[in-house]
Length: 393
Image (tube, rainbow, N blue to C red; front, side, top):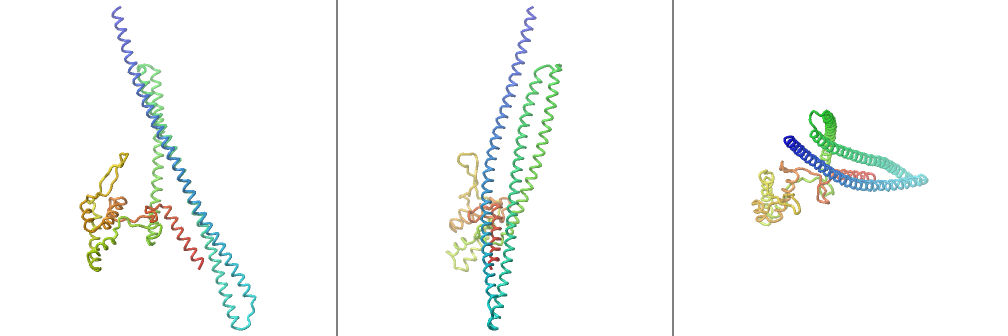
């Protein structure tokens, strides 16, 4: 009897240990599920914030575009009104000229010349009106294209957000299924038929969910490829715009800036303080060429990294202790130093690997890189001004 009691006690103890182990495992799985749920909630909140910011930006762009096109249409209407008024004046003048009776040969010749000039002017007005009509149609087409592109971008973002939600939900469901499967495996012996059926069912469901996740990832990859293609097309359009604006003066609001190009004027001013005009130009050209070679040298990197306040991020700034820059400032002054540091900062930002000058679309009014939209609107404005000038001559 005592032997059986001891066996019974050991069995109870072993069962208690097994139960305790399984309870710990279940708690671990519950904790993992809880952490996954919190992570998903954080992602959903971030997605909502991004969607809100995107919608606000889209509203601003739409309001700006609407105001701009409204101004364009208003200008067109004013010009049409002026053309119509001028046309009516010419017609009245023609009627008056026709009513006049020529008293002599000189007056008849003058009248014929005036009638001919009146006909030419009237023809020019009609031609200008036709060109203005074509301009109106082109502006409307541009507005429709811009609206369509915005709608396509918005729909693509919504689709990506849906795919992200589905992917995160599937990942959470797969994690929960794996947890349930591990719990079921530890709840009975392998001879237990009912437990084996549950394991088999859970495995099947898990494989199905993993298959759905793979499909979603494949679709997401397809969307990423399309997005990259769209970005490539935008970059090509930006390059064409830069090529088209290269001949326009850099004093305009939007133009092309050669990033990293060294300004030679401070070098010339520094040399004028030492030499006569001719020798100053020669020495300035030599020193400027020397520093252009320094700027191209990939081994020269006069920057240091500083930690930003209130965070873990770092920023690269000019190293004032760099030997070349320090000597340059001491020998040629602060303006030459500013010219060189400005060029090296532009190269470091826009072409750090190549270390050569590149052309960039630039907003000179605000001193920053111009957007593709700003470049297109600037070209459109130039085109409208040119059309208006031709129409008024």
